[in-house]
Length: 66
Image (cartoon, rainbow, N blue to C red; front, side):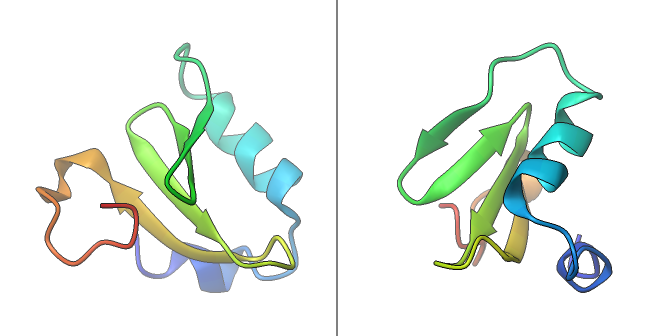
């Protein structure tokens, strides 16, 4: 999870969200500064660059979406 932002550095928010959406049938939503796609929270900066990925199964331990 920690390497995904580095791998996606050249992609925009819409491209990243679209890629994650292909693997879930759940509705994407925004909550408390994160974009949730399925069971994964995506934290973007003001320039729509991916900062962090927070899986819901991390039990809220230091992840930016919790």
